[in-house]
Amino acid sequence: MEINLEVCRTIAVQYGLPLQFVAKEFYVFDVLGQIAELTAGKKELVFKGGTALNKIYLGKMQRFSEDLDFDLSAEREIGLT
Image (cartoon, rainbow, N blue to C red; front, top):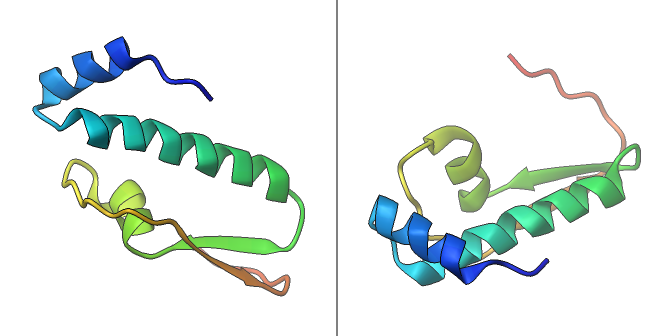
């Protein structure tokens, strides 16, 4: 994926974030999307760790994590409440 730096600059200024952080977020979501496509219907891949907490649960609170953590396990059912 090629990112548009002008869009990144606009977002960075609008939200008061460093440009590098905004650009990294574009790449993170691109990688997550590609992994989701590659693993659809296959063994369970669980997105976990600090970045997962930030993206899923923390909302507007920014956590500056640099990695993506996954767990690959045998097929099992997970109940979400």
